[in-house]
Length: 177
Ligand code: ADP
Image (cartoon, rainbow, N blue to C red; front, side, top):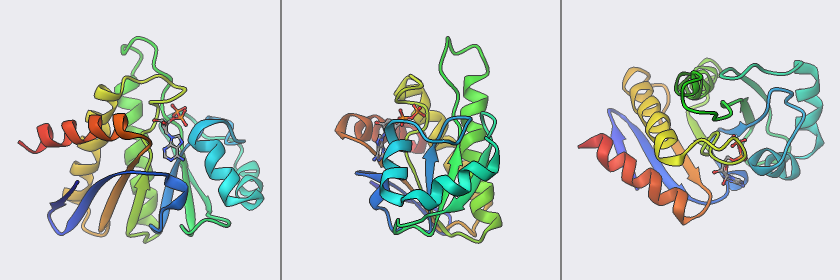
């Protein structure tokens, strides 16, 4: 699914984020930035050790913030590492922190003149954020950002599996009503 937001495109695809040819891909990292499982493990595996070497120099990243490194061997030139919240009960600022993870990632992309950005579904794996709720925050934050920032031409959500894709598609249709 692909929609226009002002002069930019918001796209949902089912796929693997490590294969994206956008200027930058976003990693759902943990606060250590020293690698983990899930999408983080896949990105480091595909991108090679140069990414981890740069991550080591960054000294971690607080939840909701973001940092940038090389893309190593990936097609994307850069990786933005952001840390989504661990979902507890929904009352521990999870929504605000998840929105911040997306916003701060997009701000870094803008600052580095990276026009196309691919995101995974942050926090909905090991961090257990319910995907219906998380997709609302992810997509609303992306739409609002694109409305205010014409320098970003493409935001692509790369959903891992058809269930995740369908959840995001349903939310985007609701959001655009
Ligand atoms: P978090 O700790 O933020 O929850 P995870 O990596 O556990 O991060 O999961 C985040 C989302 O990324 C999950 O929906 C998971 O299915 C998805 N994911 C895992 N591998 C990939 C991949 N290669 N490309 C895109 N998404 C992926």
